[in-house]
Image (cartoon, rainbow, N blue to C red):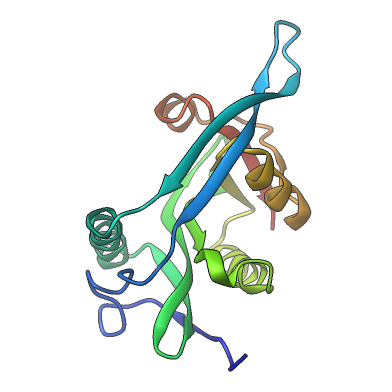
Length: 179
């Protein structure tokens, strides 16, 4: 495979068509849910997440608005096309302003399990730490595969829950990564 190039996403290298070829596809079979004892267990929850072109353009516009607002993002490029991206909010929160939020993190389905996601995560962590964050806050999808990926990166359950974020996605698992 040719070389993957990692770049900070800016208006000059990212536009509303930049995600047109990104394959955001995931077959979900099981998700983690809390039981009556407040413990996480895997439960059947089958569906397919597959972004159509309109959704990809909508997400691209959202990313553009965020990077115009000084949030930061990195893209993984292969032959001039984005095959992965990560977006971090520029806002601090938490009891001692220790968190920055990971807003988006996607790798195109054909490019997964090649280290692209890990490299994007490392770049985002480095930038967040340089900006003064102590931790990344992640409202992570509860699917078995997504949770395994975050835990492999070293993410753990958040020690401090942002209620606004948690209420926005009630089935997500609130996680953090210590920078």
